Image 1 (cartoon, rainbow, N blue to C red):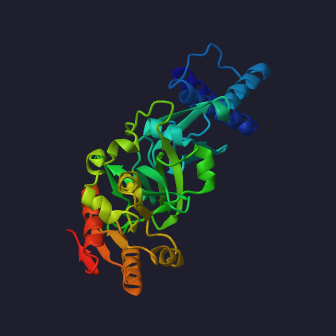
Image 2 (image 1 turned 180 degrees about the vertical axis):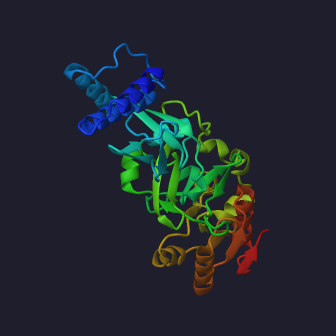
Image 3 (image 1 turned 135 degrees about the horizontal axis):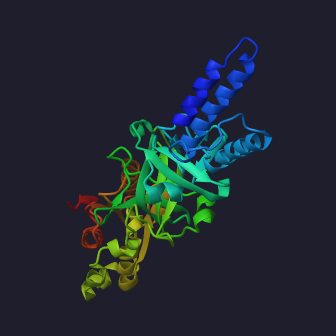
Length: 364
């Protein structure tokens, strides 16, 4: 730096009316060299010659400058505050740089734990070979309107559609409720199904804009083949199923005679189909299970000839339970409301068929 300072002073001392332009250009080049050196090395290197650079030296300086633009894809002009604030998107993020915007893949965001507003620097020789480094923590992460729901378990509806209406939380399957009260269901698009090869039982992360849940996208699929350092991988969805299924799916002879050839429908507990269907298989009766999000006409048509309607009260929406009661009254079919445990549903089945003269009853 001392050499550069002396050269700058010398330029000023030699300033005359005739060499104003040349002196300005020389001073500007010296300051460019200072800024470039601080950016690349963090200090000013010692130089042997401070005289006016010849053509070859000038070309070398320009070459270094061009190389730096490739190496540092996004940076602030202030060398003490490198990086660009990342704008978090539903999937991945965007760095708005001098040479154009750069996309930060979702995998990189999750691997490094990047958040909205983090100052990120992208370094590499090409867009395909970038290394992302966080230079400064965000002070605006709360300003993002992005909402993410982790560990959503996908299930197939009776319509053959793939939906996410439950998530793994505290080791248990719980219904997704965006407002904290009403169950909500995400219908997975064919684009996301093809992108991640999704199927029944897949566990994914879903993100959407806070003001528009319909803007949602599947942004991650667990487990990834590579390691997931930010969040530990969940166990398969079957791990969280009620382990009492094998113990409670047997009927007594009296119960078998009572249920034989009956037609029963459960609404609001389609995610527990794997636990309830064995009851029908062992009991030799017909069982249909609905999510409650099907069309009104389809529900009415399916419920019309049933012997019993059961509403899974813990997970039925107001719409679905209302429709079930409406059908029960209209077609004079016994109606039972019960929790979604297998034992409660089994109890509702026996009570509804045996005490069919009681039109409405709830088990709580």
